[in-house]
Image (tube, rainbow, N blue to C red; front, side, top):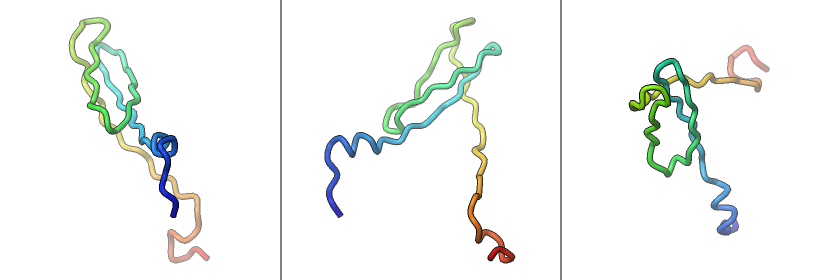
Length: 70
């Protein structure tokens, strides 16, 4: 296997999306997982926004997940 060059390594940076909420305002921030978690301020009350935790749905599009699949 070939070693990756600088450009290829930079393209492999994984991004994460975080959701924050305060005063009825929801904000999404996308940052590299290598960066520190952001701490956004609310535009209404100037307080720290609370992070929203949610689940990511699993979508199976291939056969073979059940014993009845062929």
